[in-house]
Amino acid sequence: MDATQLALDLAVTLRHDGHGGVADDLADTAGLAAWLHDRAAALDCAADGPPPADEALLTAVRELRAAVRALFARAVRPGPPSPADAHRLLPEDTALGRLNAAAARVPTAPRLLWEAGADPVLRDLPAGSPPAADRLTAALARAALTFLAGPDRTRLRACPAPRCVRYFVKDHARQEWCSPSCGNRARVARHHRRHRAAPGGQTG
Image 1 (cartoon, rainbow, N blue to C red):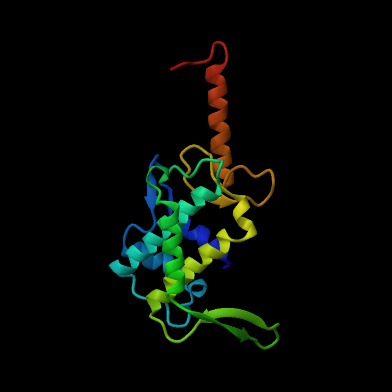
Image 2 (cartoon, one colour):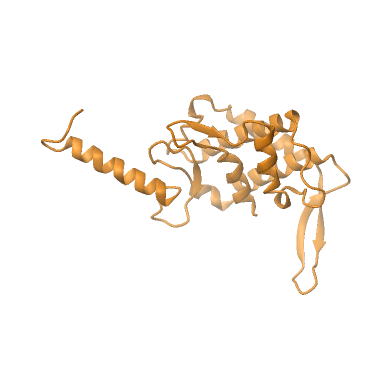
């Protein structure tokens, strides 16, 4: 999983709940544990498994998510941010400081990995033996920083489909929505608006 995907995965743990509201995949420690389990390799904790999903770690990850979403809102300008938290975004300097501090908690060093039958790969891996929770949050922060400083940032969008609150990276120039289902919902809503606006259309 690359930095772009990991940063997006964290941001979209806030999502449409299917009933007009917003669901939070990180609402409790059980949700965090499930989310981390699926991303252990990308979070530098594949060998020993993710650290315990306690309240402290839940708070730390949710604080990182708030920082990421505040900076995503900046990245999509002049387009609108996701409506999930547009009314309560962190100040941008606070968001930057939070991500930079989390990334700095775990120093890294370049390490060459060379599996049999594969090309050598150079990776920045944690130096020393930092606590597992620090390694995890630092990996999340580094993924967000890498994405925000990279070329994919310019393709970031907030999905404009009715009720959707997701961010996504455009795969091609004509992509307007995060998924085909959102595209279908947006087209249906557009059709109804045109029908109501047409002479003789319903107004109620």
